[in-house]
Every structure is written in structure tokens, then in C-alpha cells.
Image 1 (cartoon, helix red, strand yellow):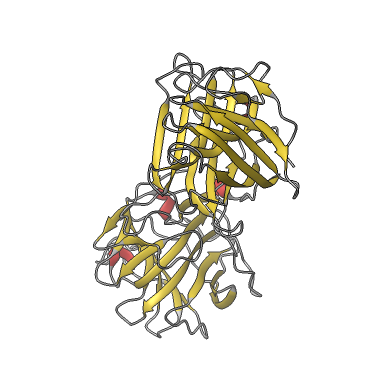
Image 2 (cartoon, rainbow, N blue to C red):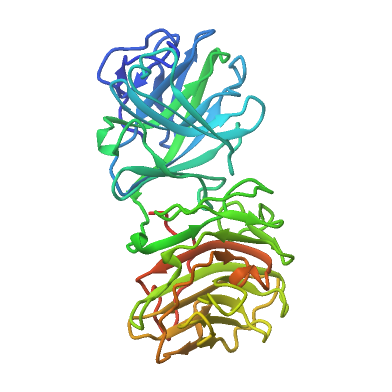
Length: 455
């Protein structure tokens, strides 16, 4: 059940607002009377009220004292049928507020029947108590949610409290990332927010009574990666069907370029709502040269490369996963690829840049088409390289020299080095970690059952 209701009088979106959980006072006129919170028979809460004609309205209802490294989740079901526009432009989400500084993020109606991921924030002179001048960010169609609900939403606060990840779910168990690494503007840290909780924002075309049921609220420590600072590439491939851009969600936020017909696809995904689709005819993605792609400069530099792959076809010419190096033998570095023994996986390293000096391949992996596999390679501080498929170590070696040449070439994902031998299929959750052998086990490991942590 939600905490007791507190009212506040702290200004407006374009002149109309009520603050729940503020420091005292009441509605400033955007609502007919004060919104009321009542307890449902199931132990949840209902927030109800009435919007005046022509009025904008927003409020923040307190859920918890927001803290870095925590995640907050609730389910909501809106009842907007009596509103003039049936809540078609209303937003439900999370809100941060202190005096006239505020930041709201959630799901907002697109004016028709869909939902968009949306942010609105402001600070004086265009703060909460002003009628205009707020900053809005329409992130496009959300991965999940309907205007009728119920919808699950979650906000994950980074370990240092400076950014957040906003997620949605159709069922409370399968989550899609809508915003990642988002700044809390105008706050530099969540510690600056006095009020945190459920945020509602109504359009001025919506007049009439409303209510929103809220339940399943949870405040828990966020699932974090203790080695996140070592992650140099993290691609989740979340987005709309057919999109030709994606975001590197590692802390370095590298630029990703789509080549050929590479695109996001919502028909297949391991986690979230979409994955990267490649057709085996020159489709790859490319990232500019970086020292991060030199996985290890010496024998005792550990590293991990991993991804989820689903092959559409798997042949000797359509099997590359990722790698760095030129097509000619002048700037070779490394390649993770299916091998010429179809269904097996291998890693190829170059010490010199002019030859393939180390090759470690699997035996018995027997990958086939139409199945998602977790493919991973790591090297520990002793220099031992292990290759895994679905958590089972299928190949290993401890070469005399496992240092990797520092190539000046781009990194290609979806093919071997230089984009050759491109794969035909899908990739999801590509992660490269330098300085850590995440698994380092001859006996294998449990395959991740959720998307990799984003902090």
C-alpha cells in the first residue's frame, strides 16, 4: 500500500497543478477539489480527482525516499473514460521534485491510441511554478504499454545517483529499456530531490474526472554489475522495428554505424523488445577504432567477449560474429566467429598484426539455426582462454603468448574483422569487458536470464 497522502501547493504546468507530497497547501485551481487517495480491497491505492476544462495539471505522489543504486516499480491502471479526450495525451510515470525544480518521466498518450516514452522537466525561470518554458522529450513509441493498461513501469537509479534507466513491461517480468543513462536534469543527483513518486501530467484538452489504480509497488536494491566500469561496449538493440540506429549503453557511449541492411527487428529478441537483424549480405554494424578493442596487451590481461546469437542460416560464408582488423594481413587483431566446422565457435587472436597466432575452437557445441545461444570467450590472468556456448566450456587453451595487437581498424559486429563473412541471423546483448574474466571456469556457468545490467 502507498504511504499516507500529503498535499502541497507548488505551482503548475502552464499554470495548473497540484503537488501530492509537497510541503503544505492545496491545489492551485487546475483541479476541482483535491485529488483523493483511497485504499483498494486488494491493498493497492487509487488516486482520483477532476481536471477543470482548459487546465493543465500535474502532481507527484510520494512513494519512497529515493536513493542511488535502487530500483522502483509499480503497476498502474488508468481510468480516463470520463475525460474529454479520454486521457489520450496524459502521462503516468515517476516524478522528482524540489521546490520549483522537477523532472518527470513516464508513458504518455500519443494523442491517438498509442503510448510514447516521455520526459518533461524544468527549473527557474521555467520551473514548476511557470506556465511555459518546460523542456519536453518525446522518445517515440514505447516498447510496452496500452492506454487502457495495466502497465508496469520501473526506474533504476545508477549507483552514483546521477542517471536513471526507465523500463516498461507488459507482465511485470519481461522488461524493455525505454531510456538508459538518462540525466536527471535539472538535478545533478537524486539526493537533490525532496519528493519522489508517482507522477501524473494531464493535457489541457482533458477535462473531467479521472482515477488511477496503483499497486505492486516495490523498492529494492538495483541489480548492478560490479564490473560495469570495465564494460567498454554494451549493445541491447532496443528500438522500433526497422530502426537503423542503436545506443552503446556502456559508460563510454561509443557511436554505432549501421551498414547494409542491418536493422532492429521486433520479431525476434532474446530480451527486451527487439534485436539486431543481419541478412548475411554485407549487413554489419561498425564502431571506430578504439584502444578498448585491444582486449589485452599482455598475457595476464583478462577480458570477456559475449553475445546472444540466433542463426537464420549457418554456413561457411555466413558465420562471423565480431572482430577487429583489416582484410589484409597488416592490422589483424581478433575475431569471434563460427568455424568452418559448422555449428562450432572459435576465437582467433593476432599478436603481431600480420598473422593469426592463436586459435581456440569448440568441440561439441553443435549450434543450429532457429535457437538463441549465449556465446562467450574469456581470458583469465593466467593467460587461459575459454570458449563457452550456453554456459558450457567447449574449448580452451593457454597459449605462450595471448597478447593482442593494437590494430588501427574499426570493430565490426555481425561479421568477422573488416566485416567479412557476415552472419545471417540475429544478435542481442553484445558486451565486451576489459580487465575481467567474468566466467573463468572449466565447469561452466549459469547463462544470464535477463539483459545485462546497465550500471
